[in-house]
Image (cartoon, rainbow, N blue to C red; front, side, top):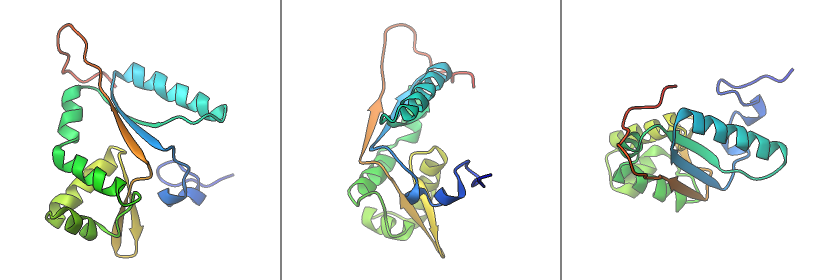
Length: 152
């Protein structure tokens, strides 16, 4: 029997840098049902040895806008420009010209939502973004705006 980490990965993948990752992270706004269908489709693609992007979904455009502020997008771009990793949160804060605490809070929040990973290396925490690109997929359609979160 294979032992697993607290996030469900086998122990050999306890470090997110050792996990297989697609090249693209797709960030979407879709209902829970649509997100579930997309996850099933991604699992099927992997079973067929096809590449599928990683997906993070938000229930509303408002939730996405609240999460992906200009500062957090700048943080993600900085990681993309440094082959997906910073030496530490302190180094990332210095690269961004921002206060350590706010960068730490942003990194933690982005990690909580699955947009990046944090690797513990001794006393420091290293932000890690394994993707080559992030694709934002937001569809606007006519009708009444629906800012209520989709039921989980």
